[in-house]
Image (cartoon, rainbow, N blue to C red; front, side, top):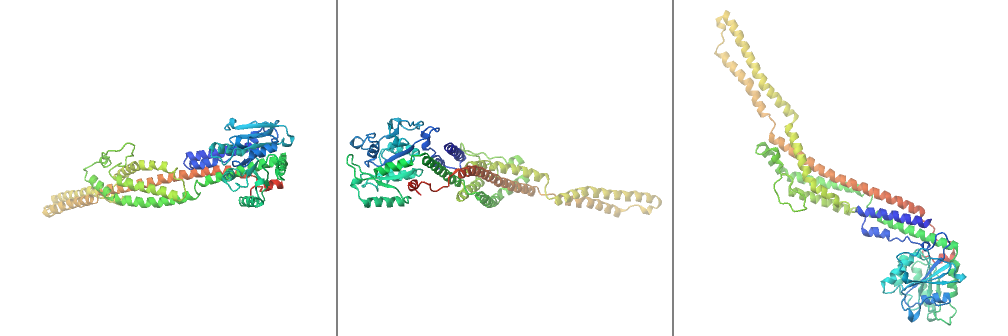
Amino acid sequence: MATDQLHRFYQQAGHWAEQARQAGWLSEADVENIKSVEARTPAELFDGGTQRPLVVAFFGGTGVGKSSLLNRLAGQAVARTGVERPTSREVTIYVHKTVQIQHLPEEFPVDKVKIALHQDQGNHDILWIDMPDIDSVDTRNKQLVLEWLPHIDVLIYVVSPERYRDDRGWRMLREHGHHHAWLFVINQWDKGQEPQREDFTRLLNEAGFSDPIVLCTDSREQEHTADDFGKLAHTIRSLANTHTIQELEARGISRRIQDLRHSLARATEQLGREDSFATLRQQWQAIWEATATELEQGLAWKTGAMAESFASRDTGLSALFKKPPKEQPAGEPVTDTGGIWDNWAQTRLNDALDNLIVEADALGIPTAPLRPELPEIRKNAGEWIENHLQRSLRSALQKPGTALQRFIYRSTGVLATILPLAALSWVGYRVFVGYYQSAAAPEQYLGINFTTHSILLVVTAWLLPWIAHRKLKPSLQKTALRGLQNGLGNGLEEIGQQTQRIIGRLHQQQQDFRQRSEQILNQLAGEEDTRQQPGNETLKRMLAT
């Protein structure tokens, strides 16, 4: 049934909105806007298996004669009037005895409902209701009116010549009554004049009724002038047929579906534009690049001091990253996570993340889902920096200098060993040959010059490679500095990437909520009745455009 389908849509939209609220995408007000969409219908008062009557209600302010009209219609005093009830505080139902109200809502106060049964066949298919005064200062009366309003097919708005411009009740009904058909009655017409009817009709034109049905009735109990009461009864009875009731029911459901669709669409807009996260990614990239540059420059003196301290071997690797003792307030994340990442650096990070929130808000992205994700970045940034510093420093010390420096350094080390050996070998060879030759010719003995040259050769072959090897040794300070700089850069890059992952995760979450919402919206659009006007000319005049 259409009513069951409406309730399914209502539940789907409410469930979606509640999940979006819990995730921070919607506010309580956004959820309430969806849940406040009226899903109740007049058909819910009756057993769905039987033909229900047309539900007609008299609405109006205090003293306009609503109860008198119902009594006149019934031909008996079914509703209290006059001094006995100057302000209506109950609902009076006038219904044929064969009609059963099967499903009176639980929230309705039963003690505020009076049911008068009749046997008039002319009103067999009509359930008449006399409602409390809608301009009452008693908020319970207003609430009672609003509780009944969704179960009404036709609203008969009753005014008096003196009070037809008193629009307090009219505004309340207009906020909640666009699902209904309307008839307008100026009661106590024996005290009214034609210009008042014309003025009232003009006001209704401005309110959206192009050709409203405005009827004038006499309030006197005994003597009635030629008024429109008979036309009022005839108009209502002409609508009390299966086709018109079904048409009103279908139109009411269509309007409710339309209201739900509009409320859901407005809530979906609160998720932010679909392309806003791409812009947010770019803006965060710019924010973090500027912040990282500032951090690298601001921490350069600390990395230099650490590298110098390490090179002098006054401190070891573990001492470089030892956290200084510090009093930390309860519940506050540790910000001094090492000798390099200090409170100043943490403050620069916090400023960047705060700027991210500001940019998200400027793009129309709800910040509630983003804010709970950022403390993870604030808390872990120091640890990420420290890990990258240690990892990069160890890696740098394992391979000091550049690849060319290491090759030349190793080469000079090898030469410092090979060249002296080669020189000694040559000297030894020359000594052996000289000794051999001296046996045959004494003049071949090696002299002082040979000895001097040999010593110089050996010393030179050893000293020059040794000096070059010492001089070409990669600087431990420069190596440590390079490792610290690379580690700091890698740590800052990880902070930026982790934040980008959060943005991406939220973007995916936004897309999921938007996709689910669009599925419901498409279903609602398929069920919504796009007909603007009914075929019944009388009913057409009773509907606001």
